[in-house]
Image 1: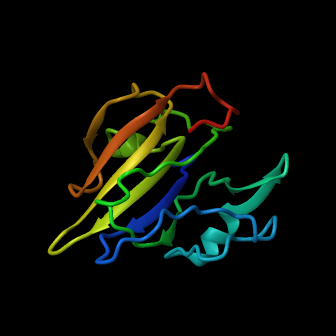
Image 2: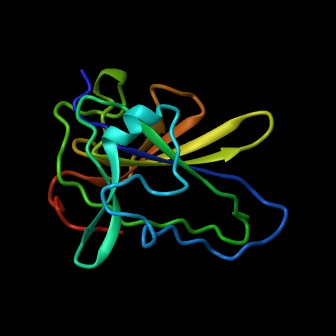
Length: 165
């Protein structure tokens, strides 16, 4: 049974024209509501899981996905050759029990961010995770999709409750 699963799914693709770097913020979004521009294949579950919250004058996307698996999507395009750096801040407050992202039965991540590259003929993705059990720095094929690589960027509970980049 899935106890906790958090994913932010971001589609990106190479663009013919160079664009300036994009910063995704929630400054204009209402606290307690879904952020504008984000969608899901399951809108009903999305509204139960995700909302904009605020602390210390900063707004952020909050997720509480107990017993649910819901990915949300913010779609954007940029030229990865011109802007190869992608960064974000995340904070883990709750950790799943029995997680191990290398196997389907333990596939819950503390936090996850997908970066999806649309290409022809294949779509490829990298899922960056904060794992409760796997060591930082390892990368492996997703047990769910051969087109997805998983990379552990954070591990364990030492930084629980702390915003990290």
